[in-house]
Length: 104
Ligand code: FES
Image (cartoon, rainbow, N blue to C red; front, side, top):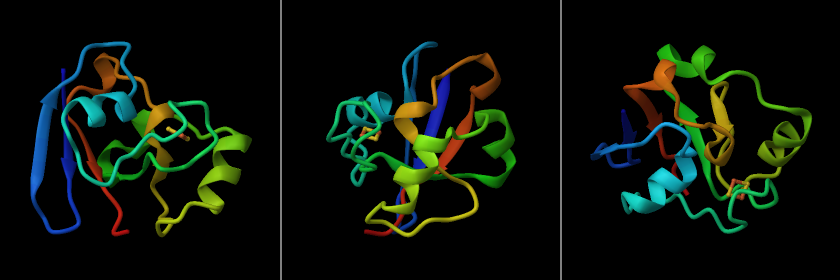
């Protein structure tokens, strides 16, 4: 399955992502700048913050209360489609997903 990250300068990085891998880990594997994943996916850093492309946002499900709280304290600007990418796990319904990396 495929995911694409759009960087703040407009460059795109696309990668194959196996089902079951979260999109923070996938970003690190694809060397996507701006996605750090400092806490390793334990919902305590928000350095994996992304803006999901509008068309894909609903497919990513709903952020839990704790994720919402972490998004509120993220260092990068929050958007209507903000998610922590460690909480989005690749699955068939997300094949082709597009994520924007927020400007730091
Ligand atoms: S990697 Fe730390 S909250 Fe996602």
